[in-house]
Image 1 (cartoon, rainbow, N blue to C red):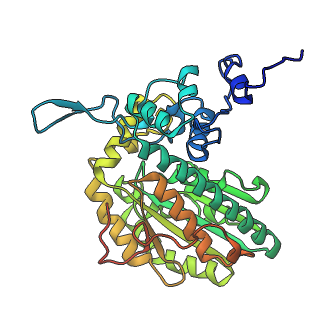
Image 2 (cartoon, helix red, strand yellow):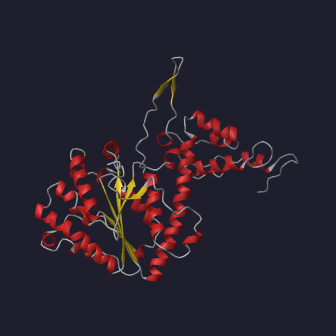
Length: 372
């Protein structure tokens, strides 16, 4: 049915009379800044916010430093002022009235202030998502190069419990072709495997030509987790520490590229992430009896970790330390490191920074200060 309109009635006026969006639908904003021209910056940010359905969903579900209740801040005059609530915990949705208000810079800022939302959090989240997508585009190009050249790449993710290894692997693999990648997270060895050479079950998982394999923990279980929790004998541990450099050198000489990440997390941050897992039913499966003892055995883990670094950090298979208290930065910078060390096709045409931040990712050095 055709709707007529008067000469003075603009398209934007008609849009404002449109019916309210149905629940669950993404709302597309149309409007202007009062001068008849679209305000690009505010409209872009507004669209980004609304398309996420709720402000809470815009923030990564693993941000654990946000508090449910915003603390109060004492002013010089003795009055109390509520601090801005981190965006992840904002318990509301944008309604139709909110949407109509955020078509101008002033309206957007007033809305965010009224809801106690930190604008900085919004901008940081949008920037993180943009960077992640751009880096994942480069990972697709890297995978294509690995396939075409028949390369073999093994990426090891090691670190304390709740350090962010699994989440980082998911960001690595999210848009890669599943036919030429594998994620390996081996369970407890069987009775038959216990009677084999220790490296045997891991050797079966090494990459084939044109393949990238992500190890969510690897043969380095025997270097840290097993001796700390008494899962191996002293003799088995010593034999492993003697053999692992030789094993990795054979892989290197055979043409396999090995990247070894250690995700470094502070004790307080680990405790906070454990607490988050306990109260989140979607994450409770991540908790294990070993996790429950991780805090009490913190110093033992540190001791064996340092021994591992000192004896297995080599020129052909170096340890790469990733500071992972900030999960988002750890994900971005570890992806950058992999892209940086492999000379894939069209690497020079990347539209984003490839070199990792040395304050987040660096090669092991015994004098470098680490979180753990």
